Image (tube, rainbow, N blue to C red; front, side):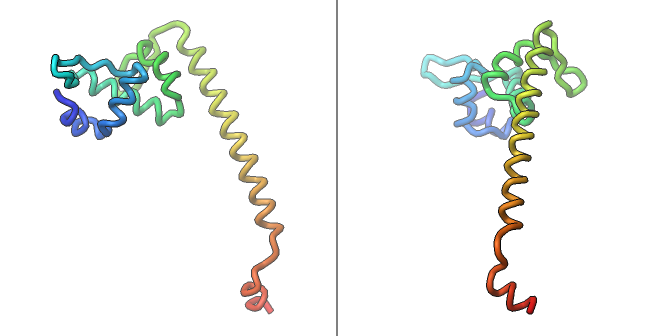
Length: 126
């Protein structure tokens, strides 16, 4: 299938499909004219990429993960021995990012609460 059909089937833009190819995540065949041709397996690969991106993985991490997972009953299952350790490291990275964001939100809440009431709010409460 050509790129337009791939966009329709996956809901992913042409630009993102090209980006996935640049990152080594997708490898469509090329016609002599340079047009990309995707197969059914590529549709599944894009679905896996989207799932892993949603899970918070970077494209670098996904490049390591993709060859080491298979799909079972609509869930990804690791098949390489080192993959679980890699995923645990990614989970820890995400946990650290969440903790940092929560600390930032807490600091913002403190600043917001310390701000004086706007003049209109002071007039209404009087």
